Image 1 (cartoon, rainbow, N blue to C red):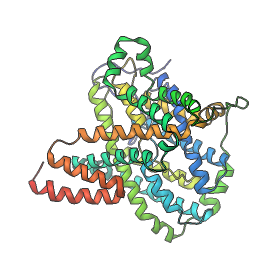
Image 2 (image 1 turned 180 degrees about the vertical axis):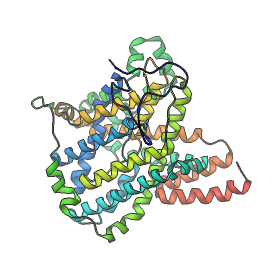
Image 3 (image 1 turned 135 degrees about the vertical axis):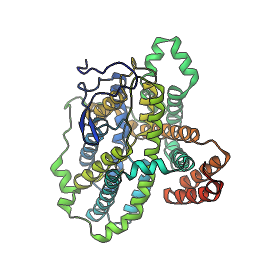
Image 4 (image 1 turned 90 degrees about the vertical axis):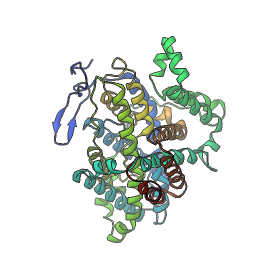
Length: 447
């Protein structure tokens, strides 16, 4: 039972301890525990653990080292909700293929790891700079809706296209991914399911668990179709403690040496591209939180892009110095933030505060990625869980992006920009979007 108390009324902000731009909130002190998000977090930690095969393959570290790096990343995830950012954070997911391709130009071992350090440290410092100067908040306010929509649509297209392209995960797990992915769409977005929930209490309770039933379905269907192995749950030791000393010796610049100036310079183009992609997450976050805030009048939600930039920057800098991460540290896990926001809109009885949903989820995933029985349970579905997340993210980005555009000119600019971004990357997409905006919209005067 929570020991905090939030006053009833209109636009009442969740209690917190002020700390400059940050607003400190602790579980059970400033927000209640939400069991649906807790149970979701236990299984959705499978997506977080999906970083392990990438880390072992790209950086050449052992499984246990990569597992420890995931746990460190999971701890830093908790900074957002507990410092006042009302979102569920995640990776800079669309940038991962770009990062891996760039790292592969360096020899595996210390040289490649130094390149990752240079990239992540650069983007971390840039995040912090944007947050401290206030440019992040101004940038989001200044960007036209057509460009925001283009970024969101492009990110959504890229997420879905990546799963269905030749060699993508859909080809590896067609039945499991198709059925569990469609089930996730039905639970999260279907109007007919919303109507059914009102009539059946059991289905109403099941609907509160977001993507969780879809992951349970994947665990069942995968072995039945022969696409996934049956989980082998280990119940001996309970927790895996990250080997911090070994992680530092393997990947920290304090042990392997800092990158040269040349590597930092080589990382700059990719750093700017990754920030462009992350900028799309800030736009998505603001749109999702604004939508949730408008649906409920009992709580005032304070989303601040500067604060979100600062926290994302702090995460990237810490990881670059201790445990450099190929997925980088992004400001948003769109699929889960949408799931939390969707349940939040059902009323205070279902979810007391947006912070109780986001905070509970991230505390749970941190504990879950270090819990041996949980990790061994979800290990077979790691790739499918990641795919479902990306498919849901694609739906959310497309829906939010389309809601932002109204005129024919905006639709055209956003659509072309999205296509270029999805096919040629963030830098090309942004360049085309800006050029089209100047040619098509700006000449017609103020929108």
